[in-house]
Amino acid sequence: MNEEMNGLPYWDFIRQLADTVQDDFADIEARLNALHASILSKVKTVLSLTGTEQLIAKGERLAALLEGFADVSRPVPDRSYAFKKQAAGLLLPAQVNYVGLGADLKKNGYVFHGSSHVITRFLRMGYLWDRVRVQGGAYGAFVRYTRNAGTLAFVSYRDPNVERTLAVYKDTANYLGNLTLSREELTKAIVGAIGDIDTYLLPSAKGNAALWEYMTGYTKAMREQVRAEVLGTMPADFHDFAPYLQKALDGGVETALGGGQVQEYAAKANWNIIKLL
Amino acid sequence: MDNIVRSLNDKEKQEVVALSSALVLAQAKEDSKEALATIPTLGLNDIPLQGKENPLAVKQSGGITVLRHEIDTTGILYVKILFPLDHVRQEDLPLLSLYCRALTEMGTKNYDFVDLGLEISARTGGLDTGVSVHSRVDEDEPFMHLRISAKVVEEKSILFMRCWKRFCFKPIFPIRNGSCKWSGRTRRVLSSPLFLPGTAFWRPISMACFQSSGI
Image 1 (cartoon, rainbow over the protein chains, first blue to last red):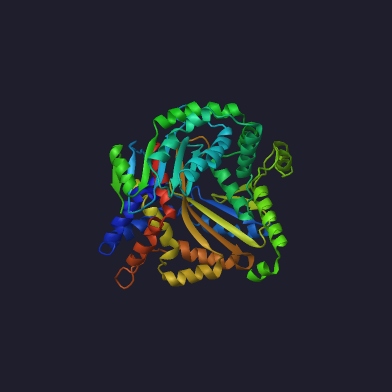
Image 2 (image 1 turned 90 degrees about the vertical axis):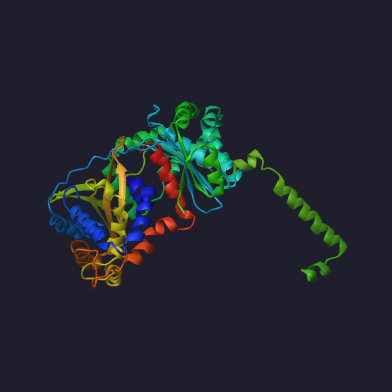
């Protein structure tokens, strides 16, 4: 869904629309109006209010307005995405690159454990920082693991390299598998991960966090379990993570966005080449 | 600086040189374990076993789920409204970004985009629209919502309701005087997320990675 709305399909859509909207506005207008009419329904609509009791009481008058919308349930279309797992080089005139590698941990047997917060943070602040940023010269590099989808993505940012950065990503499992962690290093990694979880939130952000915890079914018991797993992370968790990561990386998909360097590597590695600009 | 140098005799100059050398050496020297141990650090014992909870109370009001987050917000009410988008056809998904921006930036039947912008600015501390995509914990299947967020001070809460009615109940996307007034604006505004130099490019690549992974 995100890909359709914010990724390459959206890019194609906007470019096409920019070319045709002047002459064929009626079509897009009709589609927008139909979309608008279909969205304004009170079924499963949620109103979230953050403030004092007095403020919330005033805000609840909005619920009365929302109740005025149609009580219509609309069928959900089948969304069977047929993604091709193919490496891609996205080309544009740029002297820096954005290098990514996606991997599916869930399909390779990994079951979410709180220690993954500690491990990915440790990789981000240590391994990737040193090898992609300091040694490789990239402006940034991170790794993100999505619990629900079970996917993990490495991405670098304003990176002067392509092949070198991919090699760093692919060596991650080997690095974790052979890692020796001192008690101090492990404590630092755990404290850092807890720091991410306990990050300071302004009042509006607390309301927002509670809203999405409710919407996604992230319960207090789950939060406590993850916290206990983070606090109880041991060096063995890093080692146990490594084989799952290796399997996922073996079936991972590489993508890079950039200029001549990406084009050259994409051709050499037989990637799908897509010219954006 | 020249005056200072001229005011020093040879002995004083040598003292300055010696002090500088000692400073360079001291800065280059690794800190001892004892010195490092004096830097305060957090240990596992300093971390509370229980995390903090965010305020939440749930109630139903005429078919609408109302989530109340009671907290002192220094007189500001934060409002979020979520409309499900799961019914939206596949071919209309790219249209959603355009739709969200059109809601607040393109005007309504009775307001052009300037007047609507002024109305929103006068009645609220900001009104924002977007699409949120999430999935429930440990489930693959994502769900999505149109998200309308606003903040409003207490004394303007009633005015905000009126603004909200005008904004959301009235048809949008006008064609004025038989001609399209916002195609140029559409091109500029709606393509900007992808044309922003540098900073936005991580997004398509990140998306491509996740897509390739099978999300």
